Length: 328
Picture: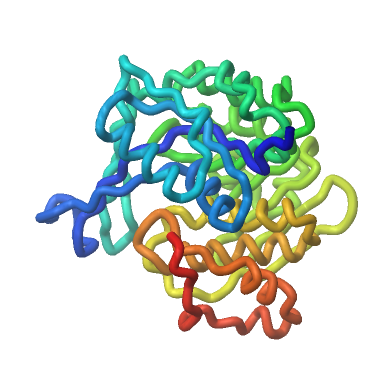
C-alpha cells in the first residue's frame, strides 16, 4: 500500500489575532484561527496535490475540535490525531506592534506536550516518503524531545527522508539550552532548514558555509538568509544559491513554514536544487503578503513556470500584482 507523501508531527493550536492589527492591549475584538508549524507545512503540501498526514494530539474541547476541523479542511489527513481527555488544546495570541509581532503562548501542559514516540507506531504512517519535524516539538516536554530524538536516530518510518526545521522559538527555551539539543537533532536529519539569524543565535556561526561545517551529517542543509537569499549545501558537491524575492511584508509569521513546504513540494516532484529553493521562495513570498500564518496557494503550474525563469528574470520578478489561487 502506498503511504503518505508527507507525515508531520507536532502541536497545532488555536491562535487569537487582534482585529485591525492593533496592539493586543488595545484590541476590541480577536479573530480566531489555527496555527502550527507542522500543519502549516502539511496544508501547503495538501493543497498542492500531495497526501499529507498530520499526527498530533489535541484536547477533548471546542478548541481541539476547531483545530482538527480546520486542518482537515485544508486537505490534510487527520486520522492519526489523538484526542486527549485529560489535557487542553494549546493557545497562542498575537500582539502586533510597529517593531514586529510578538507571540504569547498558553501551551504549558497542553495535550500536544504529552506526545511521545508511540505516535510514530500508527500503521497509517507506513510508507511515508518524507517525515517532517521541527525544533518546536523538542521544546514542549521531555516526551516530545524523546519523540524527535527517536525519529531522527531510530528512523521508525523506514525509507522516509527525515526533514528537520530548526525553528528556534526563544519564548519556549533559552538559546543556551536549545543550542546543543537542536544541533544534535539537526545533525541526524537528512534535510535541515535553518535561518542564518537563528543559527547565529544558537551556534555563533557567521555564514552558510559555517553552518554546513557545523552540521556534517545531513545530506542537505538549507540556510535561509531572510530577504537576501537561500543556500542549499549538499554533503558533496557545490552549493546552490537563489536570491530571495522582493516583497512588501505584511506579517512574517509562517514564512519559514511556507518556504519549507515549497522546497519539499519541489523535492517530491524530483526537481533540481535551484527549483526547490525557488518554490520555497515563492511560497514564502506569498505568506509574507498576508496577515495570517498561511497564504492561499499559487497553482502548481504557476510555481513551475516561475521556477524555470532565467536568472535575470527571477531577480526582477514582482509578485505584488500576482493573483493567488482562491483555495486557502
